[in-house]
Amino acid sequence: MAQTQMALDSLDFDATVALAAKVAPHVDILEIGTPCIKHNGIELLKTLRAKFPNNKILVDLKTMDAGFYEAEPFYKAGADICTVLGTADIGTIKGVIDVANKYGKMAQVDLINVKDKKARTLEVAKLGAHIIGVHTGLDQQAAGQTPFGDLAMVTGLKTGAKVSVAGGVKAATAAQVVEAGADIVVAGAAIYGAADPAASAAEITGIVHAGNTSAGGMKWLPWVIIAGAVLLGLYLLNGGSADQAVEATDPAMEQVGETMDEAGAAVTEAVDAAQE
Image (tube, rainbow, N blue to C red; front, side):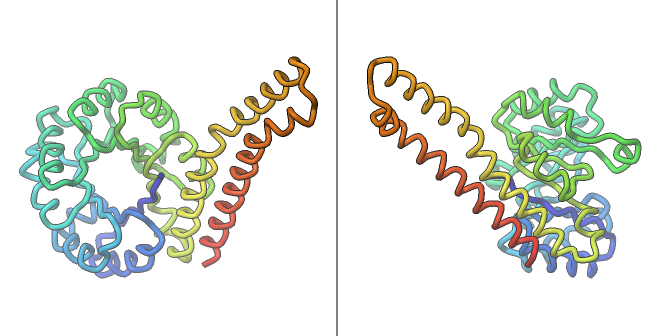
């Protein structure tokens, strides 16, 4: 099931905690952004961990060296995920993965500015990377880049690692990101820049969670319809009556109805979440 992640990028300690209090009930993961953790330090992590026990917390360290040594204090302090740069030495990446495993947590490899993203994704997946981060940075976004091409490539590799997507994601594109195979949808400015951050977070999460249901059902819906048509044809070709054919295909049609009901319920849930 895809999850939402909110990037906390302010340098102000109190403002960050206040914003987290607004959005925490409406997102799955709270991210302490790189500028934020650099400026405020590990005490901010400890504060957020104590205040929001029901959310996972990602610390965007973007580690480039001394992976195990740098990440360990943050896992000890309550981080669920720490990031390491995909451009780092493979030994550095392995260090963060190893220390994540030591504490039963997760390591995310950030592909920002990696030249050969396919090769590095396959390499770190073999090491046991828990999450691959498809990340279009702020400067890259300003130049008109989006994460969708890289997302398609990474999800197509089917490494078994979760895939996180960050880079200008908003309500209008959240469903597209989930449909493309993202496990974690990261939103920053779309939430903290909104007039009502809590409402924006609820809207995006509603879309992402609804996308899980509709995408899961719709993937196999065409096959159910095809199977029903094949059964109908076989019955008629073998001399069966139309009534017998309809009776035989009833289970398949019932499954179609259930899927449509699930999709409708998911849309209703998304609308309700956005209105709260």
